[in-house]
Amino acid sequence: MTLPQTTPMNTEPVQAPAEAKSADQNMIPVDTERDVQDLQDAPMIADGSDVEVTGVATEGFLKDKFPTLASTLDSVIGLLTNTRPIERQLGDFNRLSAVLSNTDYMTLGPLLVDVPEGLNTDYLTYLNVVERLYRHAAQAQSEVLTPLQRHLAQLISSQHHRYVYNPVLDKKIRKFAAEREVIRIELNKCFTDSGKTKLHYDRAFRRNGDWKDIYNVAEIVQTQTLVSPTAVQKQVQEISELANQLVKQVNAGEVPGMDQQTYVATEFWMQAAAEEVSLISVGYYHANAACTCLANITKQLVKNYG
Image (tube, rainbow, N blue to C red; front, side, top):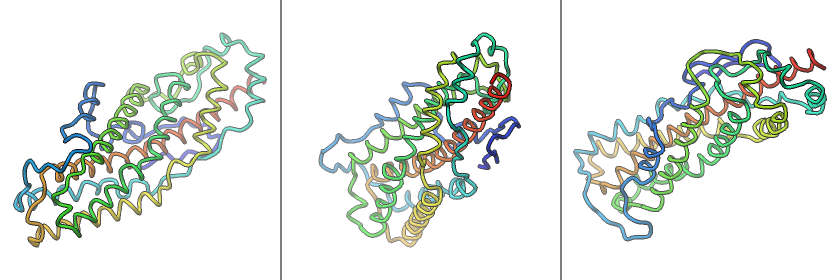
């Protein structure tokens, strides 16, 4: 994914490639809240119960499936390579506040203002979703990537671990994935395929009073580090290397079998890891795009009505 190269106070429309402005990239399609619940409640043995081996994934099955599983992260290994840090573009709110206090909302209503490409809702609704994405993505390493990395290392080094299914961790990761899908759905509702980079002021802002809340959320987005792209990329590369090492073991006949539920969980966790990395990339795009557009609008209002 190549993120748009925006600059502070840029007056050009902020446009996004389709893969950046949508959170759909590399994600399991989930269209309804019921589907999200189904994802979260996927079959597994209850928390705290003893290990239950309902079936064994045979050596032949693993040789057939593991190469594909190991390649799950290939599409996201370099996804954060060109990720730009979130730039602090919105300054002191007081100057804009003075303009808004002296300018009637109806006067500003017809004014065309910048929006991230395809935005079809007001800024406060949009930024609240971006903030939720931020809070979720900030936990991606501790909730998904690190447990997956540890799990693969154990699969490589411990025959016992291959037959031990961890229902507690599986449910935790599936719940985290369900939360991600809810955020993805909400983010997609904020956009259409119109390609528009302008909205009327009264469509982008429900009231002048929303600006204070918008600035507060934008301040969080501008000042709180989402994640370290370098650290995530390094960890994804290490996970991919562990997965490929496991493939070599399987092909060499060193893994005669695996608990079926453990294999299914491993497959799901790999896909979840790829989707979390994709969401991080999407989060960086939206943070930069939103703050750039809001800085442009602030400059426009101060210049024309200040």
